[in-house]
Length: 239
Image (cartoon, rainbow, N blue to C red; front, side, top):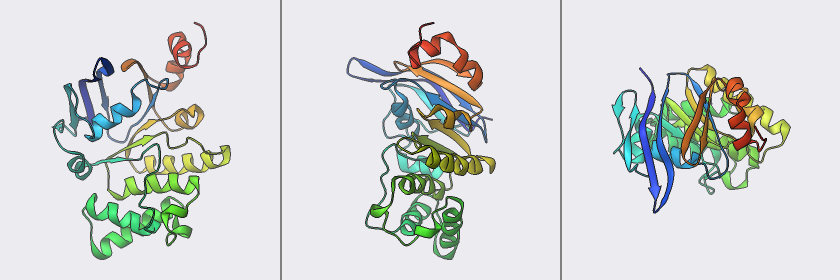
């Protein structure tokens, strides 16, 4: 059974159709990448999956359960974690406290169990050395890592990553990708929107292309990137 499924999901804002009849299945433990030009509807698709906005039509299923009308918090509890393109930590809380909030209210953990769980995530994401630092004073790489760590702290079965490598140096990107690959190796399913293609393609097993809200293609990364239509639309290379 698929861990995440979308069935003919569409969303319009006035006359603008930002998601147009999108359907796909994500298997347990799979990593799916999503690419497309700016304005293709990628982040809107994430908002539809997480419940931040409701579809005009279509359904969203998590592990076979229809969650289309569930509010965002219930979807988090059901197993959907998310990072945001612009990191949004609690700036006046420490890194460790940020994780505790996620573990308590998203992961349903408390007391010593929550503390040990968060300490493990700090180690896995390389944030242990800044655990007691206020999140508002972190570097960009550290804020990106904290976004990932907070999503992990909700104990997700699926993590949605929204351009988490954006703005990083090549060296920082390599470090972050290594962390994401390690998380994926534990069996957590990933859906990753990204413009840094070399980072994305080093992790994902399949790649989806969106254009004007519609799914143009989905398949093996090499095959998708070799498509003349994809190269023309996404890379600006004439077919």
